[in-house]
Structure formats: C-alpha cells, structure tokens
Length: 163
Image (cartoon, rainbow, N blue to C red; front, side, top):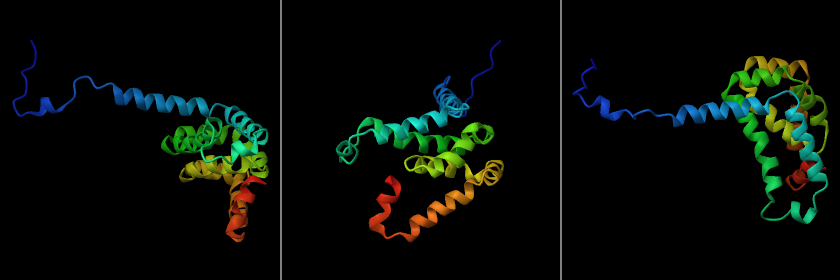
C-alpha cells in the first residue's frame, strides 16, 4: 500500500528526483581531488612558468589575453577556492610534495610566486594547513613578498610580478 499524498501543499514544493546539485557537488569535489593529487600542482606551475617565458611579449600584453594565459590565471584561484571549500582537499595539499614545492621553489621564482600565493592564501582558514605552512616557512615568505610589493611605488608593481 502506498502512503497517502499530502494535502498541505508540501509535496508539490519539492522537486521530483533532483540529481543535478549532488552531481555538480560531487564533480567539483572530484575536480579538486584530481588537482590536489601529489605532483599535479607542481607540474601545472612549471608548465605555467615555461609557457609565460616562451610567450611572445606582444601576445602577453594584449588587451584580450590568449586562452593559455586565461587558464593559467584561473586554475590557481580555482584550486585555492576548492581547498577552501573542502578541508579534506586542504589537508591533502598540506601533506603533498606540492606544498614543499610551492613554499620553497615557487615562492622564490619570478612567474611562479603569484601562482603560489594564489594557491596558498585561500585555504589559510584551516588550522592544519596554516600549521603546515608555518613548518615550511611559507607564511614568512608570503609576508615578505607582500611587504616588498607594498613598499614599492605603484608604477613598479607590474615589474615585481613579471621580474
């Protein structure tokens, strides 16, 4: 026997078999899990640096950047946001060799430093991630870069990010 339908209008307000939101959430989490796989962020960051160094300066400074540049601007921020949304992704990043790379190598390199800051700054609300950053001297390096950037005249800011 089936249960009688409700008469208060509540049943009509619920969507029947709504699968979209769970699939989107699972897809976003899966993407974050894929990106934070050990070594993937290191490879994406190195690819970004090599593509920026080998790019034609006219193309790099054009009003409408090429898709390759847009991808390299968006993926670090998206990765950072995913690690902010899901603490398990932040923990996975904190335990990976990518964190060593971001804190030690990328923060010292010209093109990789902004990418590293974009990835490291987002999940800074998770205590375990911040502890891992402190252990790798990542916080001190980020603050040093920000301090240098703040003390320069505004006309030299772009030079800091590209030199």
